[in-house]
Image 1: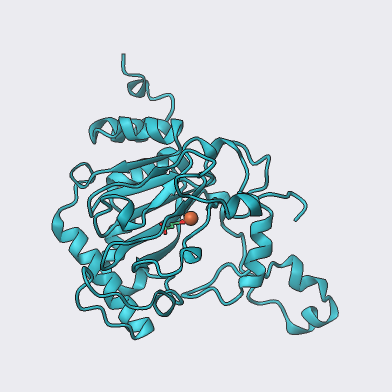
Image 2: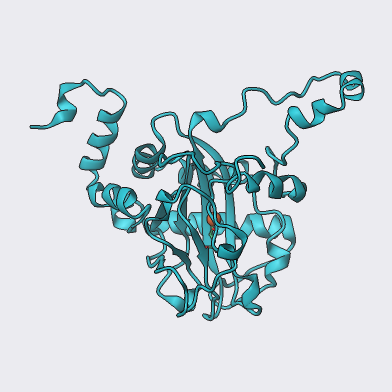
Length: 300
Ligand SMILES: O=C(O)CCC(=O)C(=O)O
Ligand SMILES: [Fe+2]
């Protein structure tokens, strides 16, 4: 018996059929059980050309925006700070970003997590040289910024990241996950964010291991961070955030008369000045940090 053939769940049926057709059922199960999965390139239907196009697009955009020229990503080691300032808002920069956002097998997994109405919310990159200062590694966090405790188990958003270089082991300084933490239903508290992710980590951690061209996809509420990189050259990743429709604003409030703003100062706050939406860079970090606090405190 194939339940999807009964046609009584018109939203779920096409997703289930896509997952079956593309041999993605193991990955769908891993997303439910662990909150994360890594799909190898051969199952994503991508060839070496795709990874090369995407890596080229990342390197060109990085050079255009930061002036940092990377001629050989396997040996060059530019300063991370210089490359890390204007990493967002990529779609218009290169067609490879549109290709990456619409891979049908990726979308089947995105829709499995976030439903048929899932929208692309953001694209950004990680270009990671060897770690000089371990404190600059990314601490444990959830990507579900702003979802307060009590937000439940459903994925309000997910992260669908294309690995653009091989992640072979700890030397690559990979993303690491706390499997099952998507069920905790809250972001990490400050002391959890700064916890060690080495041998003495208080949570069992699973690293991303996969070839370039793999997709690492996770439930937005899953706790993760990354460990220091020791390998020569750069780790390159295209990060994509997909959200459910309810995460989008109804209005952008672009036409509010300035005299209203002056007369009703509270408008600035209630119309939302949290730092979203933004373009290439986050220039309103203060607002975003406050917004992230709602991940652990519903009154923030
Ligand atoms: O792999 C990393 O360095 C961090 C990744 C991360 O936190 C993310 O993509 O949300
Ligand atoms: Fe993250």
